[in-house]
Image (cartoon, rainbow, N blue to C red; front, side, top):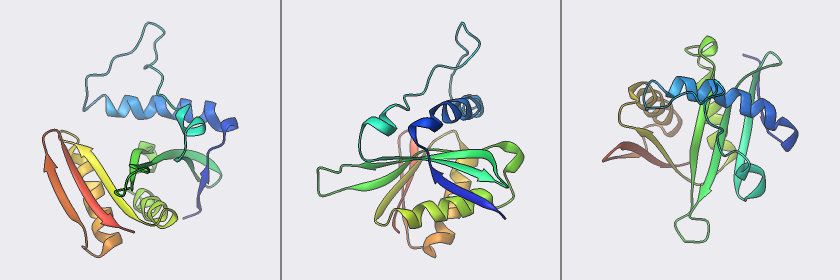
Length: 158
Protein backbone atom coordinates (compact mmCIF):
# COMPACT_ATOMS: atom_id res chain seq x y z
CA UNK A 1 0.00 0.00 0.00
CA UNK A 2 1.55 3.31 -1.10
CA UNK A 3 0.75 5.60 1.83
CA UNK A 4 2.63 8.49 3.36
CA UNK A 5 2.53 10.16 6.76
CA UNK A 6 3.79 13.71 6.65
CA UNK A 7 3.92 16.46 9.20
CA UNK A 8 1.23 19.07 8.54
CA UNK A 9 2.75 22.52 8.35
CA UNK A 10 0.86 25.77 8.72
CA UNK A 11 0.35 25.80 4.94
CA UNK A 12 -1.68 22.59 5.36
CA UNK A 13 -4.02 24.17 7.93
CA UNK A 14 -6.94 24.54 5.48
CA UNK A 15 -6.61 20.92 4.34
CA UNK A 16 -6.57 19.71 7.94
CA UNK A 17 -9.54 21.96 8.80
CA UNK A 18 -11.51 20.51 5.90
CA UNK A 19 -10.71 16.92 6.86
CA UNK A 20 -11.69 17.69 10.45
CA UNK A 21 -15.24 18.47 9.27
CA UNK A 22 -15.56 14.87 8.03
CA UNK A 23 -14.05 13.57 11.26
CA UNK A 24 -16.50 15.57 13.36
CA UNK A 25 -19.36 14.35 11.16
CA UNK A 26 -18.32 10.73 11.77
CA UNK A 27 -17.87 11.43 15.48
CA UNK A 28 -21.36 12.95 15.71
CA UNK A 29 -22.66 9.37 15.75
CA UNK A 30 -21.19 9.01 19.24
CA UNK A 31 -21.60 12.51 20.70
CA UNK A 32 -24.22 15.22 20.54
CA UNK A 33 -22.65 17.44 17.86
CA UNK A 34 -24.73 19.80 15.72
CA UNK A 35 -24.21 21.88 12.61
CA UNK A 36 -23.79 25.58 13.23
CA UNK A 37 -25.77 28.31 11.43
CA UNK A 38 -23.29 28.22 8.51
CA UNK A 39 -23.99 24.52 7.88
CA UNK A 40 -20.61 23.39 9.25
CA UNK A 41 -19.50 21.93 12.52
CA UNK A 42 -17.65 24.25 14.88
CA UNK A 43 -13.98 24.81 14.23
CA UNK A 44 -11.63 22.40 15.93
CA UNK A 45 -8.86 24.21 17.88
CA UNK A 46 -6.03 23.21 15.55
CA UNK A 47 -3.99 26.40 15.90
CA UNK A 48 -2.38 24.95 19.02
CA UNK A 49 -0.70 22.34 16.82
CA UNK A 50 1.55 25.06 15.44
CA UNK A 51 1.63 27.48 18.38
CA UNK A 52 2.28 25.14 21.31
CA UNK A 53 4.91 22.48 21.67
CA UNK A 54 4.91 19.57 21.65
CA UNK A 55 2.01 18.82 19.34
CA UNK A 56 2.34 16.82 16.15
CA UNK A 57 -0.19 17.17 13.32
CA UNK A 58 0.13 14.63 10.50
CA UNK A 59 -1.63 14.23 7.18
CA UNK A 60 -2.10 10.78 5.66
CA UNK A 61 -2.07 10.28 1.91
CA UNK A 62 -2.66 7.19 -0.15
CA UNK A 63 -1.47 7.09 -3.76
CA UNK A 64 -0.81 10.83 -3.54
CA UNK A 65 -4.30 11.80 -2.27
CA UNK A 66 -5.17 12.93 1.26
CA UNK A 67 -7.22 10.29 3.09
CA UNK A 68 -6.88 11.25 6.74
CA UNK A 69 -4.87 12.71 9.57
CA UNK A 70 -3.44 12.00 13.01
CA UNK A 71 -3.06 14.53 15.82
CA UNK A 72 -0.54 13.53 18.49
CA UNK A 73 0.16 15.32 21.76
CA UNK A 74 2.87 14.90 24.36
CA UNK A 75 1.14 15.19 27.75
CA UNK A 76 2.59 15.97 31.19
CA UNK A 77 5.83 17.09 29.60
CA UNK A 78 6.78 19.20 32.61
CA UNK A 79 6.27 16.27 34.97
CA UNK A 80 8.02 12.93 35.29
CA UNK A 81 4.97 11.16 33.87
CA UNK A 82 5.16 12.35 30.24
CA UNK A 83 3.32 10.30 27.64
CA UNK A 84 2.15 10.53 24.04
CA UNK A 85 -1.54 10.53 23.22
CA UNK A 86 -3.56 10.26 20.02
CA UNK A 87 -5.75 13.37 20.22
CA UNK A 88 -7.57 12.56 16.98
CA UNK A 89 -7.21 9.84 14.33
CA UNK A 90 -9.12 9.82 11.07
CA UNK A 91 -9.12 7.68 7.95
CA UNK A 92 -11.91 8.47 5.45
CA UNK A 93 -14.56 5.72 5.36
CA UNK A 94 -13.72 4.74 1.79
CA UNK A 95 -10.22 3.73 2.94
CA UNK A 96 -11.13 1.90 6.14
CA UNK A 97 -10.93 -1.86 6.56
CA UNK A 98 -7.92 -2.04 4.23
CA UNK A 99 -5.38 -2.23 7.05
CA UNK A 100 -4.26 1.35 6.41
CA UNK A 101 -5.30 2.61 9.85
CA UNK A 102 -3.35 -0.10 11.68
CA UNK A 103 -0.25 0.53 9.56
CA UNK A 104 -0.48 4.28 10.18
CA UNK A 105 -1.00 3.77 13.92
CA UNK A 106 2.06 1.50 14.16
CA UNK A 107 4.18 3.99 12.20
CA UNK A 108 3.06 6.83 14.48
CA UNK A 109 3.98 4.77 17.56
CA UNK A 110 7.42 4.14 16.04
CA UNK A 111 7.85 7.85 15.26
CA UNK A 112 7.28 8.79 18.91
CA UNK A 113 9.17 6.42 21.15
CA UNK A 114 8.11 6.28 24.79
CA UNK A 115 5.04 5.86 26.93
CA UNK A 116 1.63 6.04 25.24
CA UNK A 117 -1.92 6.38 26.49
CA UNK A 118 -4.60 5.96 23.84
CA UNK A 119 -8.19 6.41 24.90
CA UNK A 120 -11.65 6.07 23.40
CA UNK A 121 -15.00 7.27 24.68
CA UNK A 122 -17.35 4.63 26.08
CA UNK A 123 -19.93 4.60 23.32
CA UNK A 124 -17.45 4.53 20.41
CA UNK A 125 -17.23 0.74 20.21
CA UNK A 126 -15.64 0.68 16.72
CA UNK A 127 -12.74 2.82 17.99
CA UNK A 128 -12.32 0.59 21.03
CA UNK A 129 -12.08 -2.51 18.84
CA UNK A 130 -9.69 -0.81 16.39
CA UNK A 131 -7.29 0.52 19.01
CA UNK A 132 -7.23 -2.62 21.13
CA UNK A 133 -6.40 -4.74 18.08
CA UNK A 134 -3.82 -2.30 16.68
CA UNK A 135 -2.08 -1.90 20.04
CA UNK A 136 -2.20 -5.63 20.75
CA UNK A 137 -0.52 -6.31 17.38
CA UNK A 138 2.02 -3.52 17.90
CA UNK A 139 3.02 -4.53 21.44
CA UNK A 140 2.60 -8.28 21.13
CA UNK A 141 -0.02 -8.01 23.87
CA UNK A 142 2.24 -6.04 26.26
CA UNK A 143 -0.13 -3.26 27.27
CA UNK A 144 -2.56 -2.52 30.04
CA UNK A 145 -6.10 -1.29 29.74
CA UNK A 146 -7.96 0.98 32.15
CA UNK A 147 -11.71 1.32 32.14
CA UNK A 148 -12.83 4.59 33.67
CA UNK A 149 -16.10 6.46 33.73
CA UNK A 150 -16.65 7.64 30.17
CA UNK A 151 -13.61 6.07 28.55
CA UNK A 152 -11.29 3.14 27.97
CA UNK A 153 -7.50 3.68 27.85
CA UNK A 154 -4.67 1.48 26.59
CA UNK A 155 -1.22 2.14 28.11
CA UNK A 156 2.04 0.85 26.59
CA UNK A 157 5.62 1.67 25.66
CA UNK A 158 6.65 2.03 22.02
